[in-house]
Structure formats: structure tokens, C-alpha cells
Length: 135
View 1 (spheres, helix red, strand yellow):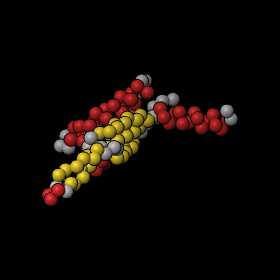
View 2 (cartoon, rainbow, N blue to C red):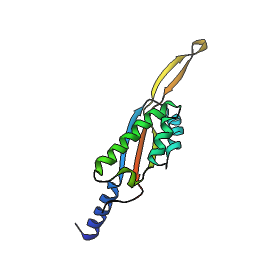
View 3 (tube, rainbow, N blue to C red):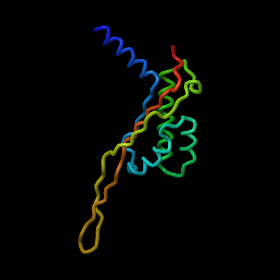
View 4 (cartoon, one colour):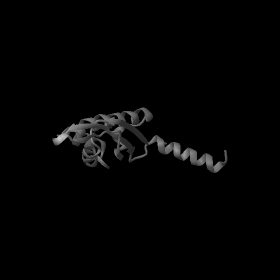
């Protein structure tokens, strides 16, 4: 491996150490409803984001709260020697993508049928550290 390639690989490895990812696949909520809650916590400090999700009335907030706690735990397992408060964790990225759809038929008047689409989504949270405390 060349010198430049090796330096780039080391830099990417150091960047990955400051991030942690958590994914939730096939969540049985429509992506539109989940995005309403995801927009509330995007870019926020982790403590503030947890408080927002805990006191939100939406059902999607419960699922996002568990996912955010999972991302924080993933970050702590990557950085065992670092302190979470000193690192200044924040929600770096949150993506809500459409998942699989269950298609059903609902009876309608005069022998017709309407299609019902039960949507699901995939959520990805990336938690990052503002301060680099690692040496």
C-alpha cells in the first residue's frame, strides 16, 4: 500500500472513531410521520434530543428515543476511555427512508375495492463528537 493511501486509511479510521451509527429497519410507521419527529432532533445535543423525544406525544418519538440510546451506547463502546459529557455528543445525521409496503384491499361501494398501503420506514442515526479528546 502506498504512503498516501495508508495516510488516507488512517485518517478515515480516526474519523470513524468519533462517529457511531444505529439503524432501525422496517419500523411500522409511515416515513412522513417519522420525519416530523426526526426533524426535531437533527443537529441537537444528545441530552437535549433525549429530552425532546421523551416529552413528545408522538408514537414515533418512543422508537427514536430507543434508537438514539442505542447509538450512544455504540459510541461509548467504541470510545471506552472517553467521557460522553466532555466529547459533546450531538445528532450529526438522521435519515428516514421508505421501507417495504404491505398492500391490502379495502371493500368500497358498488363492488369496487380501494388499495390500502401500510407503509414502513428505515431510520439511520449518526452520533458524532464535537470535541476530539482522543490523542
